[in-house]
Structures are given as structure tokens and as C-alpha cells.
Amino acid sequence: MVFSVSVIIPVYNAEKFIEKSIASALFFDEVSEVVVVDDGSNDDSGLIIRNFQNNDDRVKLYHHKGNLNKGRSASRNLGMLKAKAPYIAFLDADDFYLENRFVRDKILLQNEDLDGTYNAVGFEFYRNTLGEEQHHFKTATLSKDVVPEELFENIVSSKIGYLHLNGLTIKRSILDDLGLFNEELVVAEDSDFIFKIALKKRLGAASIYDVVAKRGIHTTNIFNDGDIYDEYNLKLYESLINWSLSNSISKKNKDLLWSTLWLVKFRKKESLLSYIAYWGKLMMRWPSFALSSLSIKYFPIIRLRKHLFPRFFN
Image 1 (cartoon, rainbow, N blue to C red):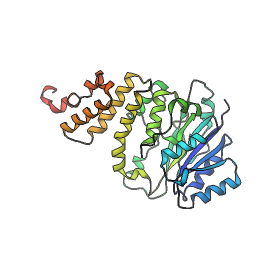
Image 2: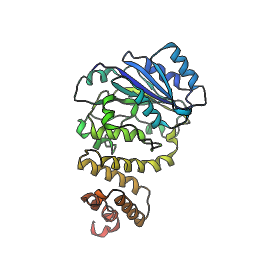
Image 3: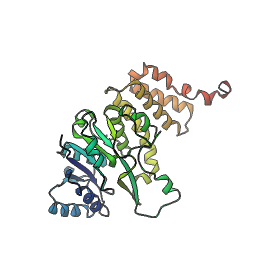
Image 4: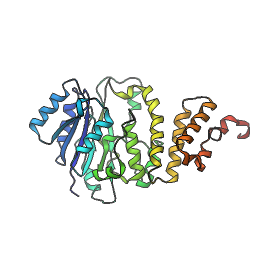
């Protein structure tokens, strides 16, 4: 398969950053098209994109019907549906690639057993750092290479690090089996997509020690809103469990999904009755799990037994 890449860039009011983002993607001969989806911007983003179009026919610009703002997932989905190259890579409008972005991908993806690759992604500050941010914003990567079969268990718990969408290169053909981004997730949709690939496909480590892209840190990043992540992280794992029911996911990985779901839920520090009510709601939603051993293992009293009855576990 010829190594030709469609780079998908969703854009919403990114006039300060989009020029650098698009230019970084156009740098590569391997990039046959930069698919830009303007998600209803009302600043000068569209003008900047059209200027690129006038100078490079690889830049393709799309809008949602009615020029609506539909969010990052819907915008990436539209971009992927329009993409024509055999490989897809992602880039946010406030981020950019470095010159080594596809060096290792091109080599590794000659291996027909791999469905995609992942790379290290760094950070670029467009504002002053606050508090411990320099320590907090570490490189998005893994501390060691792992075989594809063990990737999910290592990233779902962040045991050896985590992956960022900007460092991912995938075969377009896997979307026929995998599906697109979950448009019901306002945030954490990128984690949902990466986890699904790790659960069902084979991703190989390309450049995990050398950064190949940078993520922009500025005053309007959505991750500054901790409340929305608190809400949607739980929905993320509920969605993944629901998806696992119609996909051939191993019992081991289903177990990991349930375990992580409860870790996120327990962080809310609610009452035992609320946990039991939540468990009951999940069992009603997924009757097949109610009849499995996992329903017993993740019953709240079982999960919290050491906390509820410490004298018996000392």
C-alpha cells in the first residue's frame, strides 16, 4: 500500500493557530490532502483556510450542513468520510507537526500486520505557565514499547503513559469495522476512539521517545474546564462497555473496562446506596452483564468490602 496520508483538522475559531497547523501538515510529501472541517467558525479561520486553498490544492475545506457548529467528533467524522488517502492522521487546529512526524510511520506501516502507529506528542505554551503546569504537561507517550495485544491494558490505566490523537496514524480501511468518533461525547471522544482501536486493532509504536507533534496550550483549551471532564469521563467508560457488547472483546479487557468505570465512579465519593442504585441501573441497561460473573465482582459492596469492613481485612 502506498504511504499517502489524509490529515484531518477540525476548526472552530482558531484564527490565531490554524495557519501554523495547516502549514505543518503541508510540509510533508506523504500528505496527499489536508482535510479541514470548519465547524461553524465566526472569526477569520475560514479566510485563512481559503488562502491556503488558493496556493495548494491539497487543502480541502468542508462545512457542516447549514454551517452549523457540531463539535469536534462530528467534524472529524465528516473529515474522515471525505478523506481519500489510504492512511489517516489527525491534527487539532491549535497544534502542529514537527519535521519527523511520519518518518517511522512510513517504515512500520509496511508491515501488513499493523493497522496503525502511535508517536510521542509534546506541548507548546502560548501563555505563561501556571503553578506545576510544566510538571503536569509531560510528553504524551509510553515509557516503553508494548506488543499490540497488551496496549489497551497499559493505556486504560495510564500504567506506562498515554497516547494523543496527534501522534496516531491509521489505515483508513479499519474505519469500516471500527466506526467513527462518538458524537455523544463532548470531551474524551479522542480517548474513546484510541481505546477502541487498541481493543480491536493492532497499533505499533513508531516514535515514542522523540516528539513528532506539539499540542498548543493557551487560555481557551477545553481541558481547562474540569467539571465537563468529570461528567464525561464516566460516560466514556459507559459508552465503551456498551460498544464492547457488540464487538469481540476479550473477557480480560471487559473486566478492565468495568474496573476503570468503578474507579472513576468511586472518585465522586457518593453514598453506598447511590453506588448500588447506579449498579442496578447498569444491570437493567445491560441484562447480559447482569447474568455474568462481572456483575457480582463489581457489585458495590464487593468492590468496597475492605473499606466497609476493615476489621476483617487487617
